[in-house]
Amino acid sequence: MGANLDLSVAANLPEQNMVVVLLTELINFQNELIARLEEVDAHYSAQLTTKINDTLNKMHEYSRRLQTLNRNILELTKRVRLILLRTQALTKEKTEAVNLLVIS
Image 1: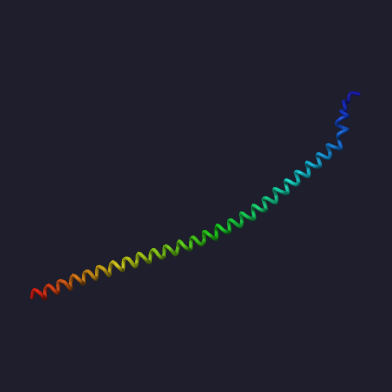
Image 2: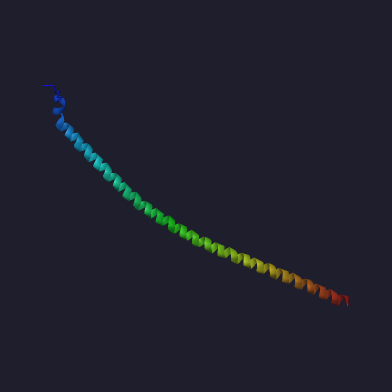
């Protein structure tokens, strides 16, 4: 009657249905696995981000403290130089005074 029916396809229909069901289950399993992996990735990414932020905050605090320490060291260095200059000036004045006494 004009219609070409492939009976081998019709005969394999239950097996094809089983293959479709198995493929559907495999796809669902893959999708669930991907969803779980994304959850785990998000969880560990959040933990890692938190750890990195905490470390950066500590580094910022240490950097601030080091800058303060460096400023204090520079200030102390300036004071020591001033003390040395005053000491040298006093020593020079004392030497000149002693020389004047000796000459007189």
